[in-house]
Image (cartoon, rainbow, N blue to C red):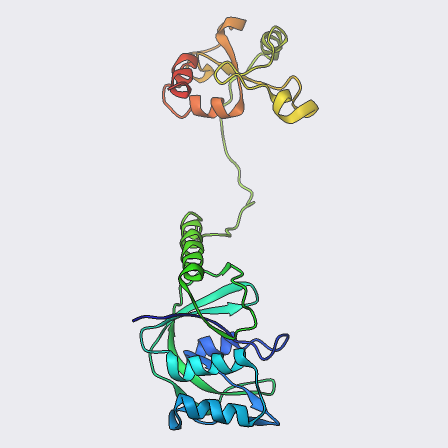
Length: 272
């Protein structure tokens, strides 16, 4: 039967985090000291009952520390899954590859010496997420169904969000270049006449910029030439009936097609 664990990698409540060292070594390690010496030596040489006797002989009644070390020494097995905890974040996930092992100083960092561990195949593609499962006093916590369901739900959500994000987060922009182009003149007078006779609503979706953005959107709307100026052979008359007033989104959608969609065609798409 596969068991699931949540494990912290910190020396004391406010101490040094050694998660990265454990991850890089491919292990999940733990250690408890009393008067500068390990509370318990090689647990593979004693059974659980003897372990309890040794622990009590050091006058250390702490049940959470005792159970955490017992989990690593006697309860973790090959194929189990460990979720690494750092504060309120789940920062790693791995599969246990070995039974309990003992090697003094397997973790050494800023005076920390840990010796009890299991080998773990940590998932290099794991996406961290924030999830407070409480029971934070437990260095090693066996996950019940309720906590495991919460982890699986957040893990799935996080993976989905990462999948939706373009992996390229940075590219250079802003290089200057010269571009040759031909422009068609537009007559601002006819556009202004059209706007003044309107209520500044999009003729497709009925949006009014002032209603959405407040005063900054007052009297703002985009003029769309029903017959594209670019398709004309040359200069030709334009009346206010040749212009439609639309919002920027609808204007972009109109020009997604060639030839452009009509106002009626786009309106029908919205109202489907």
